[in-house]
Amino acid sequence: MESEFTIDELARESGMTVRTLRVYNERGLLPPPQLKGRTGFYSEEHLNRVRIISRLLDRGIKLNGVRDLLEAWDRGDDLAAVLGVSAVSAPVAPPPSRPTPATVETTVAAADLAERYADIPNGLARVVQAGLYEPQDAATYRVKDPQLVDIAAQLQAAGVPPTRVLDELERLRDDCDHIARQFVDMFERTAVREFRRSERSSQDVAELVAHLSMTRVTPGRVAGELIGQYVTRYLEHVTRELGDVLPDGV
Image (cartoon, rainbow, N blue to C red; front, side, top):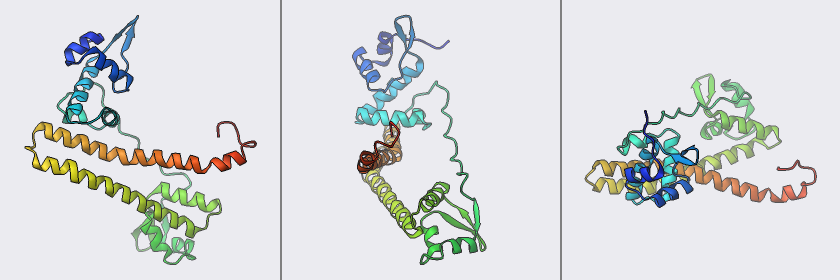
């Protein structure tokens, strides 16, 4: 039978104070306990999680960074094994593969694709460069990124000229590439450089993996949140102008 702990018992087992554990609960680092009557009971999973938090904090990672890492772990990254703590919870299933949008074909004849973008100078080369399609053989191209192809089709159906669509997709890819390169460069200049100078102990590896996990998830999360904020800001004049005809909540 799995062990159960009150918060006082969890504090003793983990070497933390009750107040610290309550802070972890408030900050979303610990899942809520199972209530039995008025008493909350914690499991071995909570104990393992507290130990992981402690190790990450010992590496100088702030609470917000620890929370990001734990969210990455919950998505399936095996941080527990790397940090030397056995996870007792069931493994998290990997995210489902991204389905191909129904409106996007998986392959297209090279002649048809060239004709589709015939009005754009070097149109065929540009759709390949933009990451929409890639050659399958001499006569056929296949979809490389279904979402990008679907977005391009939706924009063109809305009346955006194909040249403008490709321009914007190329800029988007360039911007994303720049963001990714900058974050990886910072990772290499700090965490990787420090690891190369270390004794490469298990603690050094744990710290490197923690920074690696943050580098993988932070740029996309932050960029997505910022883009959403800016889009909302730039749409304010539209929603104000058409607010009387738009449904509530739009």
